[in-house]
Length: 362
Ligand code: HEC
Ligand code: HEC
Image 1 (cartoon, protein in one colour):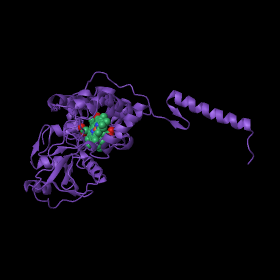
Image 2: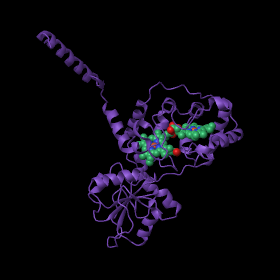
Image 3: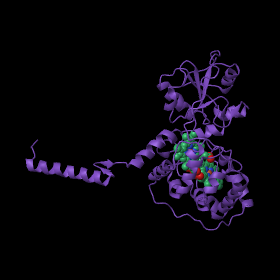
């Protein structure tokens, strides 16, 4: 291969250096790619640590627990920052979506939440749409018929308790504008189970349904979340339970899981074990298994040194095992061998009327 003259080689080297300098100076571009800003890196890091377990990489959704597709283009084009901020900070009562703000005992500062809102919008590939915020002309009575026929099988009879997102949730409705609800119902969410109803129902019937949804906003009161006495992390309570008790029977080491009934029987037998609540501390404060301590899945490190290595550690969440499974994996990676996951999660524990507590104490 013929060698380039020295002067040409020098010139191309110089060009390359100039491009690199310009890229670094602008803070956005690198030769061949985009360099994330500090906020973008922080947002991506938070999302990966705390949200990906349910909402999946790139916001595809449905990794666990029917968590919706936050990266969906119809969603991002229509959602306001205020809506996102509220959902992240306050969570969604009655679902596994935690309140992530420090004010509720979660791990995120207001600045973190803003950063996450920015990260979600970074997935938006087209401009925001202008929403139809015209006055609602629907009739809730007519809407009830349409809803029962077209929507209830996915969203539940009054927008909760169905297999998909609880659109009857009061926290959602109080931050969703009529335009947002109309747009979601008219256009749907491409690539998810939510089809658009613009052509099958028409705008009139859609307004009837939105009018119906507005009636739920008043009769489903939001359950106030307890305020933490101090910002998290919550100090680890006494572990293990029953330090002089017998070894539990019938526990299966992670990745296998152990049924709730087996765990309850071993607690009743006063067996030696620790019960770890893997959810955000805000959920722990709200309600946790009696005797459990808070060890959030996204950051068990502050607790690892204090956890016993010779006692079984039972991880649980509400998902029923997305967050608890993540915690169990992290503990196993830290060399703990007696780790199991409560198979059915807190929901089944509660439905069996097994004991739970509220507040910071186990
Ligand atoms: C086949 C199941 C299915 C049916 C039927 C259905 N939906 Fe949905 N709906 C979904 C899913 C799934 C989502 C969330 C999609 C996502 O991940 O973004 C959704 C989202 C929504 C949202 C947006 C909520 C939010 O905060 O993002 C609204 C509003 C909504 N649906 C209203 C309706 C109405 C009104 C009807 C009936 C006319 C209806 N849906 C019928 C599955 C369904
Ligand atoms: C344990 C699973 C889980 C985790 C972890 C989780 N979410 Fe959610 N999220 C959900 C579920 C489930 C819903 C829907 C709640 C409902 O049906 O009312 C939701 C709803 C939302 C919504 C509202 C979407 C809409 O269309 O109305 C936003 C925004 C959101 N989550 C953001 C986040 C962010 C940001 C994080 C990380 C800090 C996160 N979530 C972590 C399960 C989760």
